[in-house]
Length: 336
Image (cartoon, rainbow, N blue to C red; front, side, top):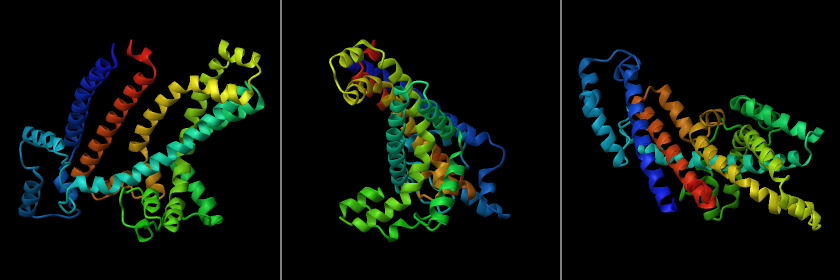
């Protein structure tokens, strides 16, 4: 199968997946017991106010008409109106998403660097004390709850040592220049403000390390397994016979050949991190989409919850599609 045919087939498979996802979110949120309009108001509300509220959000229309408007709006980039103040949810997402993306990038970078490094070190000393210790570290970090690790790091590095802010009074816009990309560290660099970069990096470091540490166990196990197989191959033995250095053989040849499945996992975990940073953002008060979703749940903002979940679902699906295509470009055997 040619690369073009592979890409077309993957896109054609992705389209019905997205429609199934959108339909499931729409149906599930409407079969949950309770009237979302009534749940939004903390106290009793007059029938007139309730009717106006439903009409303004389109909740008074038949279900099939709500579904058609819902799908049509998504094609226009319209995720609906918030129940809180009738503001467009797409604007809320546009403001909050860069913070989630920035946290995901730094957390993934930390997880990959630490996981691959430890995985290589573990594979070089099979069944040694180092190997067992690294594997145990990977298991523990992957099993530990992310919110518990986050609170532990806050207690040690914020409360006891005072090295980093705890995130409880996070207000980066006070320190940072006007946003360009929405990524705090990148905007600081573009503005040439080194102090603002340090401030934003201080706030970003602990949540990134927390999320990256929990995730690095996956890359430790995957790297170790693939490196053990690669280090037994003939080209590695030939390199050793020719007198190549251990570093050249390990990182220049073996790791490159073992990196394809690692790259696939990077893409899949990156997509999962974008949608799964809710606990980390809540623990550190990071102003991303995860924290926004929690806030909307507290406010019983039914339409905002729906829009955020749909955005996360579409995003994960599209990132997965891109990973599949990149993998097929790098390894033509995938297209067979």
